[in-house]
Length: 311
Ligand code: TXA
Ligand code: MG
View 1 (cartoon, rainbow, N blue to C red):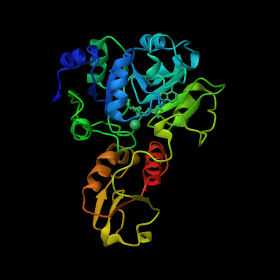
View 2: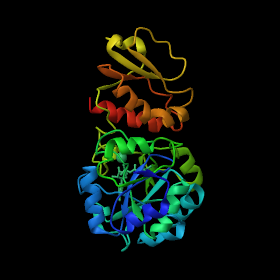
View 3: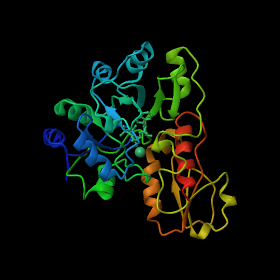
View 4: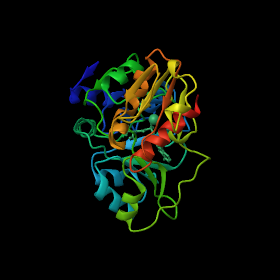
């Protein structure tokens, strides 16, 4: 059921159930991060392998620190600067999280989402909420309550409706367990913003040996094959191709042309809804002309590369 009743949703969490939770990035599928049975249910519904950890969502910086074994100065700095917001910090895990939320890593991913319903739910439930994106493993992330209902409605009793996600791609993940902070997944908080806040350089993003499903080569995939292109003229069979492209892109002869907006930020906000709609457009494939690779455009490009890798 799609609802805005936070108390009802909090009762579901306390009883070990699952709630579709709006955040500013994408919708999450939330469960009590301290409960083994709730997490087992979460992983079964999501279809997610047990060795993939989940982000634990909390409502205050003090609360975040209580889920970690240590709270370094870098964490304090980034938390005060960017939370609530689209930034996830990886730290050594404390005792509070059930090991099932940690995927055997011994580390914990923490974030305060910038979304009033999510914060109200966390506070009313009185625990941290493990919440992967509320899609089946490997598929397109949801940015509306309806997306969640379409993907998981059979298995999720309550979906909180917070409207459309304002950012549209998942949080930036920063690993604070190494000698230097390192980005594991790009998002709306960019490397430049982090380096400026930390006053130190980040370790370079390392490809390969991923611990994280969102960093697997193939992920975020719609049903149709996705082709990442530099120029619409390179598409061999435009008549059976739906093109997703920035506003004003010159393109002729396509099955459909979908407007991804004039800026990388608008592109990010629309991305997952456009991939879902393009799946239903009646074309045989989706060609995507990405936004410029600056700011959040880098996060969009990262998700599109992984969506195209499954084709
Ligand atoms: O914006 C977001 O981050 C959204 C919203 C719902 O908060 N959540 C999200 O969750 O994208 P998910 O599970 O789809 O992606 C979380 C990523 C995964 O790649 C996961 O493996 C990684 O975070 N992760 C979680 N805990 C980790 C840990 N302890 N060490 C390394 N990576 C971790
Ligand atoms: Mg995900």
